[in-house]
Length: 330
Image 1: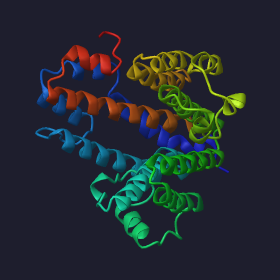
Image 2 (image 1 turned 90 degrees about the vertical axis):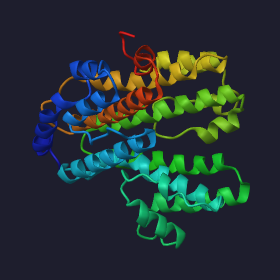
Image 3 (image 1 turned 45 degrees about the vertical axis):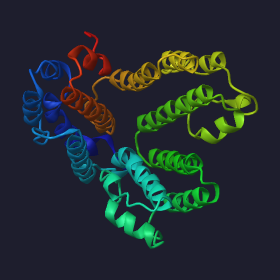
């Protein structure tokens, strides 16, 4: 049985890297960099690849590679590989969606595949094309086959996505249950709540019925939609459903977005709520909680770095960039 002390080395490594994270004073300094090249130079000092001279597409590709290398390294050092796979899983399902839609459109989607998942993209593509999925997890392989069939039968990519998204959250819950830390299981529940909130907001914005909502929801969350799977959900009911959760404010903004409000404000608050919850857990000495916090923050950091650098390249003002990044001083 894995114990907290088994995470001592990985926690120590993470703590040693914290001073070079894109946060706090370091983040503030880089946000004030006089131009793209200087920002790229400062990021390289933090361990990022050399991004100078790159365009937006090249930056995205380099950051994806950086993420893949980081996750592979940490999985090799973790006493429980499943903990790192909680963060790798979504890239496998991104690749599954890409392969299915590319095949349906008779195009090669190789350039859109991401390398941060559990499975090498080129091998997954070859095995998918050759119907050789027997070595993959049963849930994943079955979802690939079902989603492919669904898209072929209905010509509706959204229905195929529903199949794969449901399998993703099912696998995610299974991974969480296999990990020693109860906090990881709580994190996955909150991830599921976040996804279900987004599904409900999407349902409201599209004016769809309870049947659509039922298809779009995932099991494993803490919010019970109950009767709203039988009748249409209203904006007021959405707010009430999430009023006792960390997503209460996000649900309010989501309800407003359904009436013409800002969708980006909702998404920013939804993501921010999960980050604040993780930050509020405090600094753990050692254990699975340390890499959990680190990797969740790392994902947010990568997103911020991409937004910042591509914004600089596009001539977006510093004030607008700070607002996009949720900077309190904007």
